[in-house]
Length: 329
Image (cartoon, rainbow, N blue to C red; front, side, top):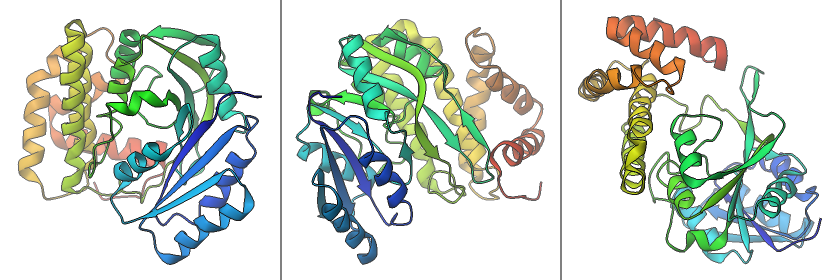
């Protein structure tokens, strides 16, 4: 399939083990007019050299070496140097279907717009696979898209699995030094689009690592989820105050998600109590919201009984679905 140049942004930091699978999936893309912008974010020598090896394999590869600045800084660095009319982000420990880019570009051609979305498959360490895909596609207004994202209704905040017109990033950057940076960014990119093309087929393969930064045991940096979610809440309500219920649901969900990250920790009592207080203050609003997921309401009911019951149920759920370690309850 022929079309404009599309830049694939790949922030790389000590992931040489996963690079071959990712790069192989990109080199085989059915859409050919591509550049692969690899940003070595201060990796160790072996990974930096691995990036340079790809220069020899495909003349569409561009490699930049920079001091470590984190995922957001690396993405921003690559986007600023991309030559494409469109941009897509791929994390180098994931991989994509061979028609990933063709599918996203087809959606933009079918529904003339500045942004398109596809779905993910999630691969867990225990071998389980969760596929969010199904047939079909449609064009949504930015308001519809954001509302569904706030409710976790198929559309997610991930930077990956999306195709963007490059000019959307003229006023938006990923927040440097923050975890969950896409929560504080994707909504702002959506707000610049009148319409967004949504494809329901899964074309992006996300690898869930139990030992990754986001999925590992709690650290104070994981409180970034609350900051990024509240930033999104402020930005959305400024444009669409009528989405208050959806925004509040997402803010409560962010607290529950952060609480889940703290489940195995005996410390952080102050932060845990603040989160529980917030959830109890606003939880009834979510319980009354017909669009709020049942999962949220079950969690709120359990937490209203007591934290220990909530904790035990979360550990059982995580071990069953995600293949997590067996922790003492």
